[in-house]
Image 1 (cartoon, rainbow, N blue to C red):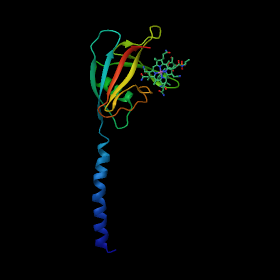
Image 2: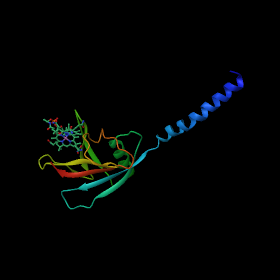
Image 3: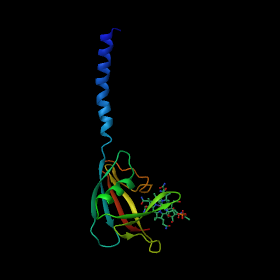
Image 4: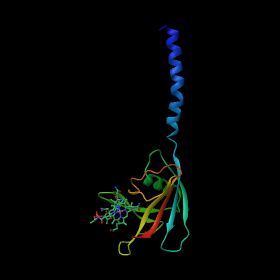
Length: 138
Ligand code: B12
């Protein structure tokens, strides 16, 4: 191959690669999700917050970011030796073993509502997910 043909070939290859590189870069943009706080035991209005989750980031990260930027939103969790973070309280209201209350994790995805089989430390939200933290009884 002559020098000019090689250069032309390399330029064409680069042009083909650039859109791919740019698409890849866009996945570093955080995705927006909503967090809805529901109390199924007391007659309290739902509260909805909007927060961001990084590409393939966990729900706990998005909740921490929300807590840092929004003084209205607070949560606490304990660390289970086997399953990781267990959500204990949201906005000052804590689950109680003797009363059999806890914060359930539910998600409205684009494909319907689910009850994830993992907790806040493992669930990876998808763009436009509505995460529901529901105070309820077990
Ligand atoms: C009973 C139970 C519960 C009860 C616990 C109440 C209680 N005080 O007993 C309640 C209803 C609160 C519960 C809730 C949830 N649970 Co649960 N739960 C179980 C179950 C059926 C038995 C646990 C048990 O008693 N073990 C025996 C005792 C002696 O051992 P232990 O270590 O002390 O048990 C404690 C932990 O298991 C802890 N725990 C229970 N569930 C969960 C979930 C998470 C994420 C964490 C960190 C801890 C935790 O609570 C137990 C009592 O303190 C297991 C399944 C199983 N067969 O093991 C699922 C299980 C542990 N739960 C699971 C899940 C996903 C949840 C939820 C996230 C469900 C949801 N979408 O809301 C929520 C937690 C939400 C939150 N607030 O963070 C998963 C965890 C899998 C994972 N890798 O994360 C399991 C394995 C079931 C499954 N789907 O496969 N759960």
